[in-house]
Image: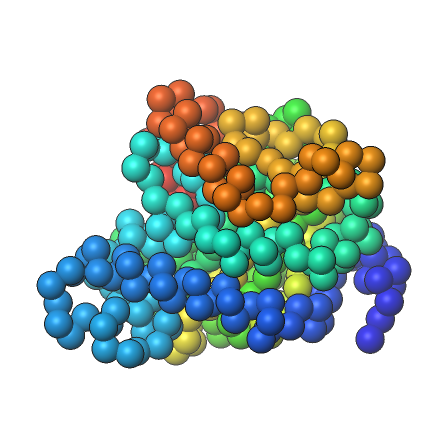
Length: 330
């Protein structure tokens, strides 16, 4: 296995690196999956509280439960499994998953040790974070086949979803699959070395069902697309300026992942309406948040504030008219 210095060198050169077997699926990921199984049961019970044959009650797998949830309620109920809020679309009762096991994963020593090797020891958990659940495309209702949260995601850079105040922030994206991620199931596709061109022009196109994306004419030429197949335990680190995308899930299995961001303490986060948390610091250790209840309470306080004071989220012009679609919010 390569050293952390070698992974960092590849990251700087290529704009991304997969760190294989960084996490232990049994100890690091299984508690998160079990937590999501409980949360999914709760959502299914809300969907049909009196159904005797409901998947929440008959011992089927989490994968089957997630498929049932999407088939019968689309992304409306799936939102209750995300670890983020939909910005300007947030209401006082918008569901959000803020489980203890997710917090423990995002602040685990193993993960933060790896993050430190990329951005240093003063680490802030950035507010851009998501759970992505991609059920097989053939199982999706037609209206869900255009959603970046459940189907394909167009070319984009993660720096593009925050405001200009953070254009020079050393934001690091960490992508964690909890299931096998293959070409068939819609793995992450990156533009090899595409980060070298800096932040590219993005547009918002809702009539064309692309949402926030990089139009083809702005993508750097001559770079190679790389399909990053990964297994649970592998972790992908992505440079803030690396163009990446994913395709629909054409397999027979659910693809599930978490993607979170970290940045050095003191740098602008570009999303001041959402909470951020000191998770490692040698200079101000008293500020470290290690209690999931604190993390949860601050997100719930942010939800209350956002419901009354919707922020301006998008910094890019629209290529077509129409209202922003919450499902395309990233």
